Length: 126
Image (cartoon, rainbow, N blue to C red; front, side, top):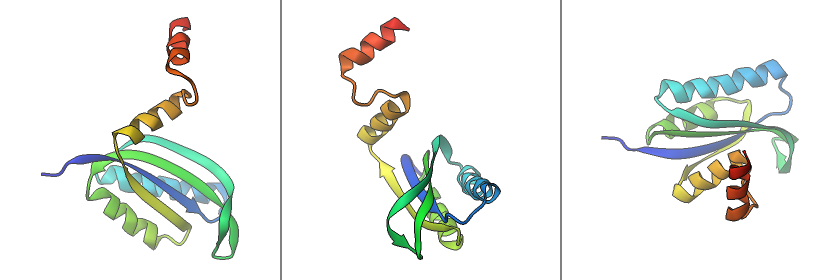
């Protein structure tokens, strides 16, 4: 019996790709997740950003973040696909604990940096 866990993966694509190639690559990894039974919770494109240090003689890259829930075997399949794809210059998949899941939920709702009273007050005004 497998247990589901919450995961977050960030991957960086090479900056020489066209918009169509970027979209195809992201769709490929989304398909790997869904084909293996993962449920995608959130996806974000962080756009072209400067790297902290050069990787493969490149100073920038397209950053993408995907949060998903799945069985423990799915990140291994995703890892294999990341390693096989030469368009990916870096990736990192982490398991999220309950505090990280709550933090990401608040971040998506735009409630970071606000006190609990401000958040409740904003909820009453709507």
